Image (cartoon, rainbow, N blue to C red; front, top):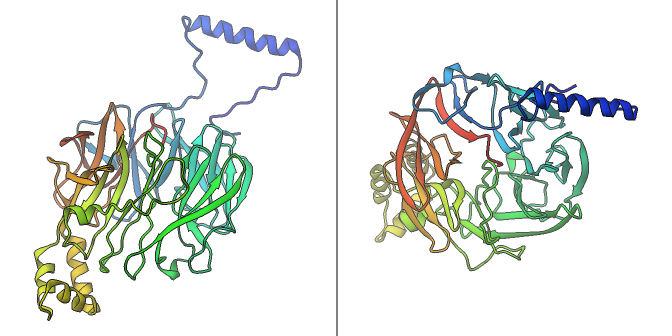
Length: 437
């Protein structure tokens, strides 16, 4: 029997009446308040996570937003801790012990993380699970990638399966789902090759299913403007659908190919990517950054506005390297550079270590990018991507060579202030367990 679940068997009317009577007495004993369950979970608070030198995850719970400096070494050590959904204060994720399957976890009354249920899978690489509401969740077992399994988040029992074999397969082989995005009864799922050895797809594509009918609906996508393919991103949670019903989703661009990361829009009432909406935040703020033109951590934070970490400039040593190639124009020099694998690797080494990325606010309607002032720039490939909201403000992680901290800002006023520092591990993410997804 699960730690947080109790079952009462009422065989007769008298037994039921007795239970009701005892509950009423309990209410009276608690001065009119609802009775406190024998076993409770925390319904508010914050999880701050970090990565150890051995690449394990440290997770620590805080009743309130921390202040000063917090030490993550006092947290719980897991092999991994990668939530993809939070609903009704429960955390859903690939099992933190790295065994095949998914876990449902909660913070108990002592402030400790505990597993309250598991969903088995065959493939130990299965990682995507999502919760739409209190009655409906979905996941993919990568051993059967053409199936979306629908389940009840309370009981974790399977309620339906959705056959997705009709979905677009760009290379003819099976895909995996990088996330599940809910819009009313529909699920939109960006895809990438299920076999990691296949590399990237040549564009950005999504499958769509419907939870009212439990059927496949269709596919939509856009081919990449240049060869090399695009990354598909697997952020935490939802916050992809605007208040007017427009759905926004990003790809990750491609490193070293000149393919800028893009944000796509599926308008309200439509199942197709809008071909006339092309928003490339890196190109907007740093058009010369064709070498590492990625965005990460994209999430809507207010109507028409989103937050994302954007690579805003190119290290001078990379510019100097490209300028050394033959050509009468910069474009010709770039073409020569892209034909030299050794030069590309040299440039990427510099790009991965240089602090060239900034948290930015994106205006999804005007397609503008504004750097959030007051927070340091950080490594283009630095960890720490998940942002969370609390009391109308957005909290985001900063992890540089000299600072590990959380900052906050108010949407529409992109000026940040530091909230707290982190020690004891390399800062990863933060989660507000009071918020659904």
